[in-house]
Length: 472
Ligand SMILES: Cc1cc2nc3c(=O)[nH]c(=O)nc-3n(C[C@H](O)[C@H](O)[C@H](O)COP(=O)(O)OP(=O)(O)OC[C@H]3O[C@@H](n4cnc5c(N)ncnc54)[C@H](O)[C@@H]3O)c2cc1C
Image 1: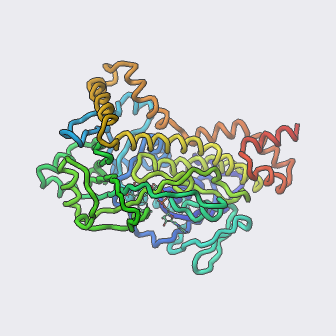
Image 2 (image 1 turned 90 degrees about the vertical axis):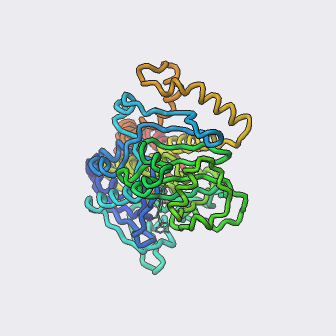
């Protein structure tokens, strides 16, 4: 994906976390100037775990990160779902069979948020993206394409991308007329990380360090999941807990830390290892679950400002695809903008990005919600049915790919394969094959204002089809 665009643009990206940095790299590779503005000093690195599904691993491999992934990520062989209500027995296994991963041409990796951040940042800087820290953006003028920081400095570009996270100012105050309705889901995620050297000194915790699986505990209305990170030198554990209190002072930021013995909500896990782990960690990062209503617009009507990453498709904390969706956004924007040859095409390409990415992200969000609900069912008849169903298929699930029943494999893996096989660059190529010629013709036959007003409020595909019929 190193094709350089015939026309080089200036992108201003707001937010230097995973999505912003990934966009900076992909757009730089496509031949554009990129300035990234970050509110913080940039020194904070997430200590927790992050999942890297094959759809994301393939992009990172394409971006030449494989040697660093080999060093810092852990290849996950299976997810094991354990009952935390009864004996802690494994109830379900999702084996990531070699046959399937070979066909997907990438592994499911487990890694540390900070490691991913650092490797992407080095990559983007090496590619020539410019980063400015301690620059909180307080205002964006979408028509003038300017971003103003709290000290009054003004940054101008051809395109502004809001990679400013879950509570995005660019989304709430610029792209949308009103911010999406948000409500506290009465859940808190608590995440902690401990070195495996320390865990090995404890007879119980030692066992967690001996398997590269993704550990999942299904408890009464709650779930815990954990895995090795940082090349196996650390273990990260995350619990999702229901809280009654509306007035929790926790935020969505990932930057707060609390002393574990000060956390005063019910800790509903029976496996003593879960509690012991947090005791050993001493502190944990609390992240509040805010659920936002869906919204349709990712691009401002000027056609020059768009949102990416969690700003565009907010997920619950600690899912499998939070980072993956941001990386896919970046790969798609890089691919679409690697062909731009005139400024009039900017809005159409941003609307194409919106149109191509929205269904994918909505499907992935839905599947993450269903999965989280499934593993955190409250004790009762539905949970018993779930456990019974899992027990019945456990024998099949433990078999090798070649020995398992074909119908079982299809029912178990089909949905995962659809998510894992997605290729953002290929989607962008297909779009371009279908609409690129029309876009090029449109450039010659239309003035900027005509083109932009057509793009405004309409999807890229309908925009282009209007121009086909008018030029016919
Ligand atoms: C410091 C940090 C640590 C994290 N650690 C973990 C972890 O351990 N495990 C995990 O699963 N997830 C973690 N996350 C969440 C994870 O990054 C996201 O879920 C996702 O992977 C990528 O989201 P994003 O880049 O779209 O947004 P985010 O990661 O939320 O980043 C948004 C960025 O925009 C910046 N920003 C916001 N507003 C402005 C503004 N007005 N002007 C300039 N900059 C602005 C923020 O400071 C932040 O750097 C962390 C996020 C952060 C910010």
